[in-house]
Image (cartoon, rainbow, N blue to C red):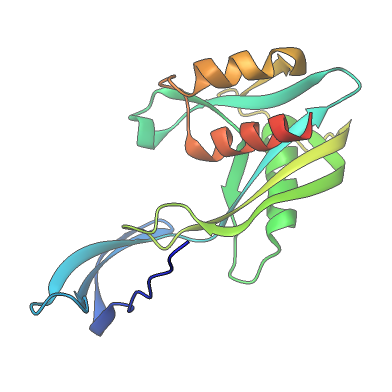
Length: 188
């Protein structure tokens, strides 16, 4: 295998904040790539660190996802792992995932397996990083608020391979969930 050393790009000056909405900001960044003479401008979406969790109930032979409308899907529902952003920098991603598991599915988990530890979600335009977990040893909790727009979907472990094949092409799919489904498949 041949290894090529790639020089990092240089960021020129300070990023310019163009807009902030909620916990998302858009910055204009000027950068210089080592192979180009002219600097270029790009947009950088700034997002807090996020955490996602895919609960698995081995005793019942199922895994659980949530169906909910999402703004990125222009209001259409997605079928995905429970997920949310860390409330403050430095928060524990596992605690955030546990909060989302309770809020979105009404569950707690005893066993946690880290699938991704702060991986970039899409570094071509965003600084968002995500932690992803598989969980088991599930118990119900009264902590779940009544939202009315989030539905828990129970899917059989025996149909995981077929679900992945369909999910990959589904308009309800997202990559964090697909990653977690593949990780789950590797454990079976």
